[in-house]
Length: 237
Image (cartoon, rainbow, N blue to C red):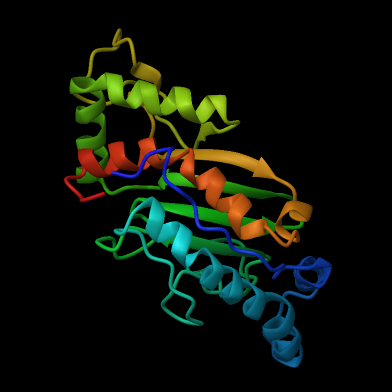
């Protein structure tokens, strides 16, 4: 299991720049397929290529944290999330995301609902995150049962996260989940529908030559949570 004492390989060389954020801002104001097609080359140069270079820089660090996590610098099907939005069930029909999403997820997971590490870049804020988002009901119940039966490991993970500026975020139930006592000492955690630790960072930190190493150090603080979630879900870590 990876720990906070894991030696993090040092990666250098800035990938993101002010031009990356500028393109996202322009996309937010011109969110149409015609505009995006006309500016495809600019997207490739200022957003996708830097993101793929960043993922490549992160590979050694991610594998050092856990060999079960993936860092795949591919345009499609890798760690870089696609720019197209799935608007089928949304009132917002704009076709493109106005953020960059990079996920280093568990190799046994098939989609964004698997345990993983995440970097979010957008004009309205950037953040680093770790955990599991919107797990399906069987996985969600397994995590809750693990917290009920093995609370100490989860508590230690929360303490580590909080001491390094992370906060648990995501959706929660308004009522106690079925099968759990309404007076349970960890009811607030059991009511969670997402188990995500989030830390806000500045875009300027992502433009530094040591941005990959900075992110790797932040992700290292999340390994206890990741290991706990994988244990709850019977996944290797």
